[in-house]
Length: 368
Ligand SMILES: Cc1ncc(COP(=O)(O)O)c(C=O)c1O
Image (cartoon, rainbow, N blue to C red; front, side):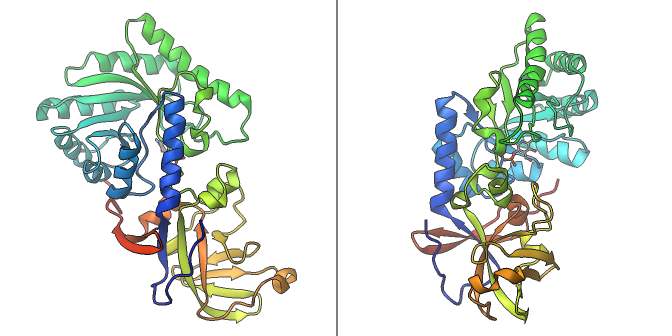
C-alpha cells in the first residue's frame, strides 16, 4: 500500500492507521489460527478501539483479551467473551470485574492462592461465576507460577471453589522471538506438558491452554499443547516487530505523521512528535537505534526526545543522499512500540480508500 501525501491541513502530530494493512494483519492471523485449530483471543491493549476489536471478532476471533478492567468494560461493546490476563488484585478492580461478569463471560488469570480467594469471595458476594486460568511461568519470568507442583495445587484449589470454574492454563512466552533456539521452544512446551499430564491424572481437565505473543504467534503450532493464542501487537505491528524479524515495514499499519518544525543544523531536524506522541520506548533489539523509524530518512536516527520534540540526526556522510529537510516538511514515523504510542493519543485517524476518519481510542488511559 502507498501511504498518500496527506492534505497540508492534516494536523500533526497524528497517529494514522491504514485500514487496509490492519485488515490484512487481522485476516492473516485468523487464517493461521484456523489452519492450526487455535482459538484467537486478540489482546486489545494494542488498539484500545472498540471498532478494531469488532473487526477482529468479525474475522473469527473467539473472544478478546485485556489487561485492565476498564478495558474489559469498553471491549464488552465488541465481545461478551473476555479474558483479563492480569492479576485482579485490589477491591476497586475486583468490584468492577464481578459487575461485568453479570452480562459477560469473564475469565481471569491467577497465579496465587490470594488472588483466587479474592475472586471467589467477590464472585460469591455478587452471585456470579468467573472462569479461571492459572498463569504459569514458561520462561519470561514476570507473573506466572514457577514451580509446577504449586501450579497444580492452585488448579486443584480453583476447581473446588463454588463460584469459580477452572478453565485451564495461561502463559506468556515473551522471551521467545523468531530467532530463538529450539531449546526455548521445547522448554515452553514441556513446562506446560508436565502440568497438564499431572492434572489429567488427578481427574482435572485443562480445557484451555492459552499462550502466544506477536513474535511467537505464527509459530504457535510448535507447542502442541496450545489451543488458544493472545497476540495483540500484530494488528498494527511496529518498528520493534520489524527489527525482531516478525514482520516487514509494509505490514506496519500505524504511523505517526509529523511536521519538521526546526532545522537547526544541516544534518539535524526537529519534528513535532516527542515522547508524548511516540513514547520513550527504546527498540527492544537495538536500544541505541533511536525512538522510531523515519520513513523518508531511513538511515537517520531519532536520537533524542523531549516531550514535544523529536530530534532527527542524519549521519554526516549520508546527507547527500537525502533532500535537505525544510521547515514545514512532513515525515512518517513508525514508532518503536505502537501499543504505548496508541495509549498516548485520544484519537487516531483511520485511513481507508484515501479518506481519513477520526476515531476514538476508546480504552485509552484505562489503568484500573
Ligand atoms: C499476558 C499477555 N498476553 C498477550 C500479550 C500480547 O503480546 P504481544 O504484545 O506480543 O502481541 C501480552 C503483551 O504484553 C501479554 O502481557
